Length: 321
Image 1 (spheres, helix red, strand yellow):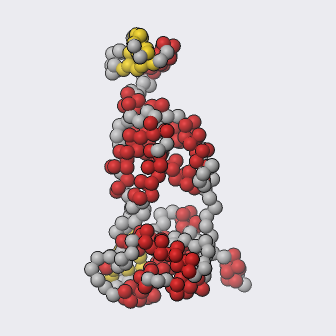
Image 2 (cartoon, rainbow, N blue to C red; image 1 turned 180 degrees about the horizontal axis):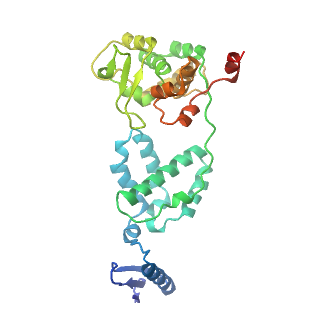
Image 3 (spheres, rainbow, N blue to C red; image 1 turned 90 degrees about the horizontal axis):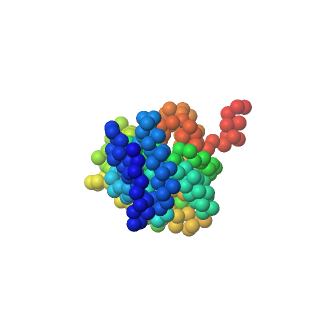
């Protein structure tokens, strides 16, 4: 039975019912306390009651910080995820108790973010929020629904279809001030490896006899073996074997150096990740099938692999003659 009492700072509703924990909540208005008490008692009578105490005393910011401390450091994309979480921690929603969060809150968040960033970025942020809430529910035992599942998602940006010409590759190599960057650019074109994978590649994982480079830790979490062409092997041989990492440059340094090289070479709208797209497309042009290319690229679904493939219609038409 619910009891409602006047307190110095408002009204306190308290419910004691056999078989359920004692719960209480403070309200500014007596009418709000009465409505809350009726709803909770109704849920108990129907056997659908969920104790929201933990969700009421835990803020959205609390699970953001916990996720950043416990989960994010284990991921290869830690830096990007950390940046998104820090952005969310600055948002007013971070101060809200989990129990008060509604789908309309995140729908409003979506619309405001779309005024500043593209749909793809907003979707990544909403995906992260959804993952955070599911982790709080399943791993940390905080009973609550996931309001983000009811939020409609904006359209992602059109996929990039930027091809890299042989002339541009030559210009990049010619304008690179670092011999290692030259090797990295050529190696990326030959292997379709991600920037982080290239940085983490170690000599101990290279099997020259089988022409294979092992990548123990990938973005997808599954290790994979990269078959190496003769050109890729020659690039590695030109570096000279040593202990530890094959390449010394760190991920951020590669991106910065690549951007400066593009400017010197007068090449516009080219990102380092476009080299991976180009490499995958060239694998298909060499005659490899979808399954063979997926082994090299590490894509788990053919739909994702298709996004990285930029075959030209005119080139396909030549094969139909």
